[in-house]
Length: 114
Image (cartoon, rainbow, N blue to C red; front, side):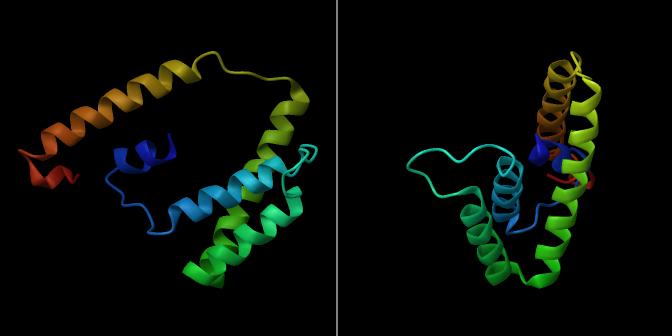
């Protein structure tokens, strides 16, 4: 979904976006109990931090960690209030359709981007 949303508005993904996503998942999973046989959540976070820092530098790491922290804070507030959204699957479906349409049209109109 993140990739589709970024591309929907003509943006290009950062070359290390997958490392950022892995850091986000690791930090989100930190709230869950460790699973038997797997690395502890903190060890996973430490590995993701080091991988992103090595690949993209401290500034990108700081930006990614800040974004993860902001989403974590928002999620905690939403979870605490018990809110849910039944509309999200519909929104995702139409955003993906629009993105496919845009990609197909971009071949004929380069000003739209890929």
